[in-house]
Amino acid sequence: MGTSCSVIPIKMKAVVLGGSGAIGKEIIGELLTSDKWSSIISISRSPIDSKIPEDCKTQPTYKREKLQQRVIDLDHMNTQSDAFKDADAVFCALGTTRAQAGSAEQFKKVDFEYVKTAAELAKAGGARHFSLVSSKGANASVPASDLGLFHGLLYMKTKGLAEEAVKSQGMPRTSIFRPGLLDRGDLARGTEKWASYLFRKIDVRHVGQACVREAEKRGEDGVKLFEGDDLIRSMAAQQQ
Image (cartoon, rainbow, N blue to C red; front, side, top):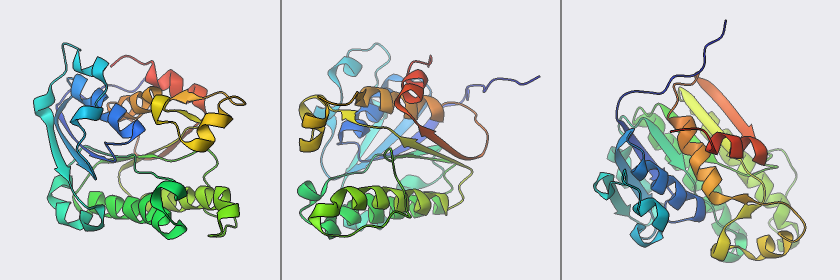
């Protein structure tokens, strides 16, 4: 007879990449309000205090003192190798768009190269679990071009390559989340604004919650893929 996953009873250490972004700030907020985490290290391009959800800050379990911020140029992420040492979980929510990055090359640097470096540092530091926020439709094998007209394909391919880079590290646990159209509120990107009239969206809060809930379980080793907004919402609704 099968048994359900038990919750890890010890205090844990987390590292968060991309904590200043829409999903990353939700992950940070969840970690700071959960009593299961004693140490959270944020590695990001900008300070995150003002971006932590206000409703998290009002929770009685919220503890800002658990958070250590490292604001760096992510080109120099390798200088932060000590942050990853013996981490129980590394959450990677790095991501941008071609428009924000300025070019296809810069987009690939953020969504692939930085993710790959984070996974390598996590592996070298002995991290037990790597949790990656990817995207619905990610596929490393899809034909793609750097031409702007085909950016949709490049986006899916780059996300797929990032997933493969993470999996190749062979960490004990790897969780990959593939949400669909994101509801970022006031942070909505151009295509997300018009697409929201045609497609159902998933709140970034639910994605962040699902990432943290999964990390708080003593799940089976190996790679787990979570694709589908309803699945992610159900995970987010689970009790801490």
